[in-house]
Image (cartoon, rainbow, N blue to C red; front, side):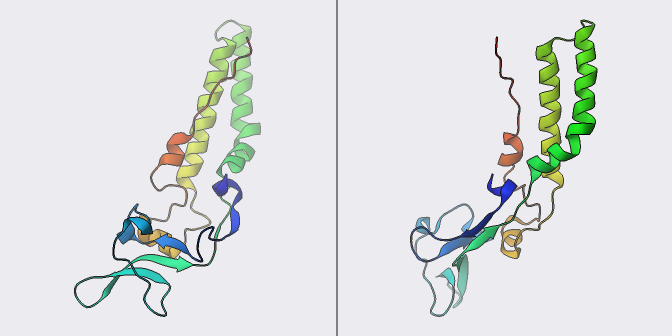
Length: 161
């Protein structure tokens, strides 16, 4: 829901900084990486790289905002009165002539809805990711990082038998 509705003004719960990972950090947290330190006057956590320089693992910020990316709402708005409603009409007609059961009708509509939401996630590119996020992910598809959100979209049929 954070992506759907956005979250303004996320601030640290413990400590004074949020740690924004760079590509070097990978999936590790700051606590998992030994030897990190905050260089004087810099809002980063870094490690000496052995060549006299520093490798930055995290950027430190006081707050961030997750912008709205309404993939559910926009899919519902765009599909409900057109393709989903039309599909329901066709399927209900099939139920009426014995070509489909009510359970099959609901399953068909559920599959279409899930696919449409996934398609919206795959094409959503606005608002863009922050530059630091693009650098870490290597792409600017705001809702596609690991694919977990995309894969989590499914449907279920509540049975009231």
